[in-house]
Length: 255
Image (cartoon, rainbow, N blue to C red; front, side, top):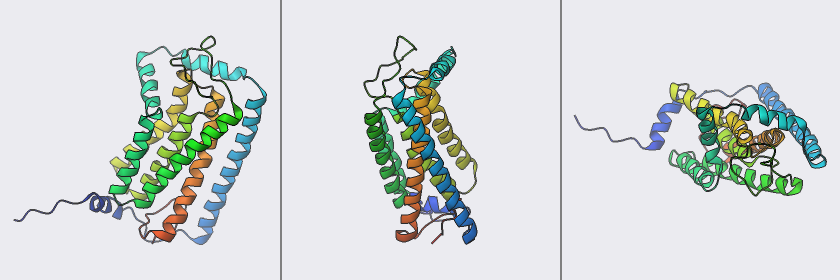
């Protein structure tokens, strides 16, 4: 019996996504509802972030920030400390750059060309916006005289660059996996792993003494806005320039 030719990464991806595809799109009314909901959530996040930014710029510190930091740092456990260091590690340079390129390359070799391009653009946009806002607010990082600082960083504090990077890059990959892969243990594992990194990175930045809780909250809000824009851009380009589109929870048409 002749050997079967080895499948390419793109063929393997087709195999694990075919059963997860929905042959029909959501009704127009549901699509409009989901689009309106996304815009309402984005507008709400923008309003809250703007208010938080004003408060951060006009007040040197918040008492609740210190209380939250002291509460988290009161967890004395080698395992917890190691976990926090591991969670934060991918967000530092140069590994953040290498991880972004690896994600884009992986998507590309699996024939997810537009996803690859969008992931790169989203990560780049997140970094640029983060640096601009940090320069405008110019909030100092927590001081070692007040909390435990595991490593002193020389950049500004608000909003957290780690959190924005995670929620934009890992959040977009989460979205792609959710919409492309059929339900399976692998899909659930990847979604859970990425979700854990996104949720825990905020805790790790506070625990390591490199950000206040308000820095983290602002980053989740602003990063969520960047992620929403990245997804909308992805959906716009996918419908117009690429023939393959898996089922989307936002009701995007599938070519």
